[in-house]
Image (cartoon, rainbow, N blue to C red; front, side, top):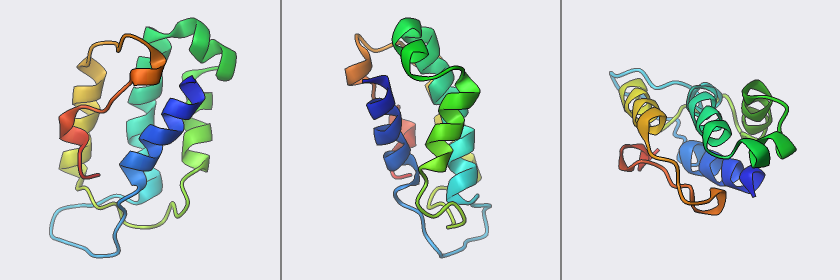
Length: 112
C-alpha cells in the first residue's frame, strides 16, 4: 500500500510538467520529484515504519524508486521552485494520515 501511495503522489507532483519557461526558476521533473519525494518518503517512514520498511530499505531507496519512475525527468516542471519549496515545507509538518491508503498532499502542492 505504501508503494502505491508513493507512485500516486509522484504522479501528482510531476504529472504536470511543461516545456514553457517563465522568469521564476522551474526545476526539471526529475529534480522536483527528488526534492519532494525526500520529504514525502521520510513522512511515510515516520508515520508507517513497519509498512514502509516492508517495501523500502531506507528513505533514499524510496526516493530512488520514485525518481526512477518519472517518465521524462528532463521536462520542465509546471511548478516554480518557490511552489515546490512551499509544498515540501507543508509536507514536512503535515499530520500523519489515519492509514497509508489515505495519505494526501497538502493543498499547497496542488497544480504541480
